[in-house]
Length: 165
Image (cartoon, rainbow, N blue to C red; front, side, top):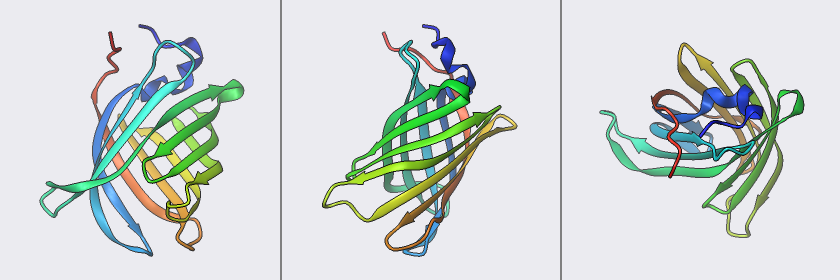
């Protein structure tokens, strides 16, 4: 199945990406993490998105699950982008931003949380395709802290997008 033609500015994301990075925040110790990200489509003008991450030990082995998020990436006229993400921790985010060549910059427009969710008020994400790797940096404002660095990673494409039957 071919991707919708409107997806051309973000079609470079399609497929499964895996890699590792570093997380940290004033409320936690810095650590290494592994991640798998998958971008797909069903022929309509949006990408499906799923991310899973896990804590890594000093040898790079998985220790325990970390964050999971799922959502949709919707391209808009003028290379504008809307991203809707949901987290099992009770947080839903809507990001807005733009695509410039193979660089994507997003900032939260709306953050909603359930009564049991931890305090989280804003996010900023920067993605870029650099030398075949998907690099990203994620800043967040949470737990009474101002917007600041939380995670960054380098992901390699391990599989092209395979449509489901």
